Image (tube, rainbow, N blue to C red; front, side, top):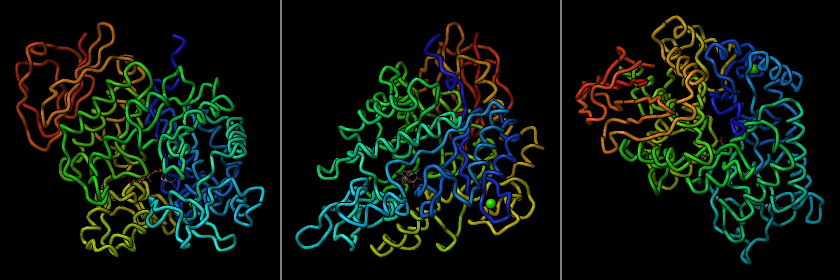
Length: 546
Ligand code: TEU
Ligand code: CA
């Protein structure tokens, strides 16, 4: 009993503040807008909000470049409004987890403004400075994730500083105990304001050693996390989730094994990166391979079964929309979105719903590169076109995997700008907002919204979804992702047709004839399993066998 945590049956809703709801008509989402939609989130049934960064920022990377960790960006509101959001959410039994971006700060943070002034400045070693090579070039050939070199020359002191992301996002030097101390102090300052935990940006990078060219999972990483845990959130009943693109099941256990006092869990991305081209990454998408995909998911379910927790997600603010990536944004949009929701929420772990996923929002298709806002997309477009990639190829990569797919404004109703703003939206809306929006979803008892609402409710009432053992079924099937969860004498069989074709599924003897309660389905409920099932396109259901 003692190791049960409040968040074990939580469902987290991620809000990208720029795009959620604009209450002051400037075309940018804000805290007041979020507060105005808390009843909608309560209706969905979620009990945690992961809020992408709302701290002061020049918005070079939409807030993932922080210039004051203890104040709110004026675009989003004030600290008082943040207090109000925390309080209003608490009234609805919703906790807020903040997005902690501590691998790097903004170059407009006072620490960096000081640091770049002189080599002997008190703040110099808050960041990573190195001498140029003899010929004046960068210390090594590290590349930035956002294009170009990861080293930026600073004329004032004749040295380069390291930035894994944009040049306005200088990496903090985690070898410096003063940096640790400053960050611990800031974390405690936020904890004292009643937040429910943190999502931790690119946490696998804070143990880096740029001289030994070690980026992820450096030797300092876990000691740093254990020291942070002890100095801040350890011993408090919080949800902490670390973003770790590099995580494997082995390394994930190091972060999330409760006995290690580090984090509650990580976001792992193996199921995402296998859809990228090994050389050209996300810009050259590979055809979806369900067999490979479900083997990765099963591996993570099995390997983290007894120590640590899986985070369960199809999308976030960096990823394309689930229904476009894994389902069908066309005529089977509703069925495939419901199938994806069921396939994810019956797995073992904490499900994360990204804003708009619950109404089946789709990728956007802008023809002009000028319509895109994301720094990663714009920088890599320039870099790859200069390297000879055709405009058409690059646009295809952007349409399939660009981050702005997830950042078009939330679609609330069919009025102007879908009710997101009566200002000029910072990023164009997806034109399909006239059909795909919250208002029409709430008016349709058969909508994707009510499917998600039911999944969230089931998690609260069925411990088998939270603690049940996971076992894959139809392991070799190329078109069906199926598994069972078992807790005591309760067993749930989940079957998902991941294709837009009807298919005949022959059942193995042990499943034949089983009958029970259909917990959820996206066609007529199935009450029993016969020798074979004629599955409709994207048919998905969960059968509770007692
Ligand atoms: O993202 C980490 C990250 O590496 C992603 O940007 C990823 O590399 C890319 O999107 C996929 O190719 C985190 C935040 O989630 C992201 O929004 C920030 O841009 C980034 O860190 C820097 O803070
Ligand atoms: Ca606004």
